[in-house]
Image (cartoon, rainbow, N blue to C red):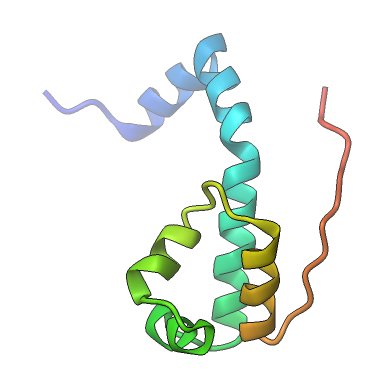
Length: 94
């Protein structure tokens, strides 16, 4: 029996443990999304960006996961995509 995605999503959306985990990962997802958007806006593939940064394509894929990215790496990524890095602290909702 197949369970519809929407029903599963609604179930987890009410689960306090799931909500805590999602919120804990929000910053990583935000960094990853910003990096991917910058690369897309620069009209670059991961391979092209890797060449500009002097790293491998798998390294770019790992960076774009948003996990443990250093400030120096973010600066290099910004330079390679023709963007400027801006770090911002915003109040948490709720």
